Image (cartoon, rainbow, N blue to C red):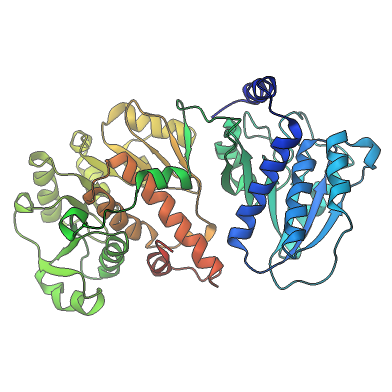
Length: 469
């Protein structure tokens, strides 16, 4: 993550090495357009909202590429060409004639009003354009795409947002303010537009992106077999809560686990066999969980908080050093017992805010609460939320970039736990599995919407079906 001043220094150094502002603008705009076209096969309608600076130039390059792909393209500004930066004016001329008319595809708004060089309150005439964008988003079904950052937002602190973006294409290096709690509802989905001339720092807090996940999940060798994919054991489900166990097992299956075993109470075996995919082995839980053999164990979804179950969990965690994912009731039982000491290096915990508060009562921002947890526990933390945070002691905070509000449904965490189990069983470290799992499930939610689901109709089962697509 970087501040505005640091970003300006990085850009100045790139120009000193011979990069040109126009070449960078063309590269950035082309890559932004390619992301839009990746997710919108059918041509739609786009309106570019322009200020006078280079963010407006980026928006114009994006609009030109969309126009070439058959999109209807319009421009909105309250400035004359003479008031714009010379390079931005040139890109407006290169866009050529606007193309109006109905298109069946998406309706997008490009926020090119202000960049990181601006400060203070958004003033007229740009304030009026910002309100127009927000109104179209509320009333006309438009989605707003911000060039580098939503106009009005302080890129250092995440405060004072004005334009509400659904998608923010941050250029080169992420800005610190974009991941602030106060910025989440203005930034929306984050997309890092990588630019070779603006290298991303290898130190400090970072985003988890598509390129990150690709590096963590290289192609399997042709001779790969199920033993190498790993054995996942899931301890989940209880009377009335069998659905959580089913979703967890489905997530593990779709994430590539080689052998997946679901351990349930003996009275639930017949019911489970009717509900889970046939690839899942369903067996009765042993009395002593320390006897379980696996490459990764998932404990908690729908498990309940029975005292005998809690005893077995604590007994297991005290004795065993297997990679373990603790979720839901698994976390609650640790909180009930006040046994934070059991959350050791071989444990990955996946709390939502309420569960984390029960484990480690704390105040502050999400980032501050994550750090307070890792100060007390060596376990790996996946802190769920609209901007999921993954970290562990002595590591940076890694912010997930994928997902959408359709994931606000019970059962999403159960699917995620199964995904994590398979990624760990397949050989990833706990922190790498957490980063990849959060990104993959969020991306699956996005793909499900592209395939026809809505934010209201999206279900955890949809996430499982769209993993890997």
